[in-house]
Image 1 (cartoon, rainbow, N blue to C red):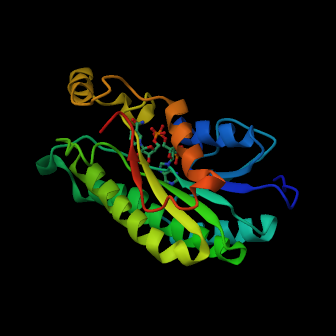
Image 2 (cartoon, helix red, strand yellow):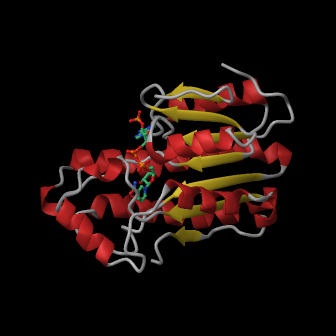
Length: 237
Ligand SMILES: NC(=O)c1ccc[n+]([C@@H]2O[C@H](COP(=O)([O-])OP(=O)(O)OC[C@H]3O[C@@H](n4cnc5c(N)ncnc54)[C@H](OP(=O)(O)O)[C@@H]3O)[C@@H](O)[C@H]2O)c1
């Protein structure tokens, strides 16, 4: 693993193997950050300023061990992007409890554990940025996405309350709620259902990776010190 020079800013991106997380990791590594990423499988890409941890964000012991390593290796954490997430498309009456548990474990418990440990690492430097991932499926109350939307509603609540609890140390906590973006997460959604969903959006198209980094840039900017506890949806929702 590479160790950044002491002055280099360090960011953690969860779910960095593919999709939005891989994009954001490469985007910030290209812009001078040292990025630590994690996912259950090894990363499918590499960068001189990127290190990968293989873990499940819902596994508390593994998450705590990763942060112990980040603390030892870098001694700082400037930003954490809580991107790891999974979805399911199912009518409530057809959703097994095990599926609901998996969704909440990754999306909600994972976000909670990563934010908790990130904040502890940010406290000594009295500054930090945490960005969580919600979804438009929550405000749109999308049928078939009850457990997914509910797990992200909980992420929004965590975001607002952590923003208050972490503010004494100038740690901001915000969330982005993307519109559908072409990744593996939505590839299983039937085309007619996706078309109906997009029809409900003010912006009648898919979102892009660049639109996500536009929002994360806004939350991460030094000028955004006063922006905390906010949920920013894409697509006009
Ligand atoms: N794409 C969209 O349309 C859309 C819309 C709204 C919100 N979002 C949100 O955006 C985020 C990223 O989604 P995406 O579209 O990029 O999904 P994706 O392409 O399916 O990627 C998900 C990433 O999360 C990792 N991951 C999943 N479960 C994990 C776990 N338990 N522990 C650690 N890593 C885990 C995956 O790697 P491994 O499989 O190796 O673990 C993968 O790198 C999610 O939070 C999602 O809810 C996406």
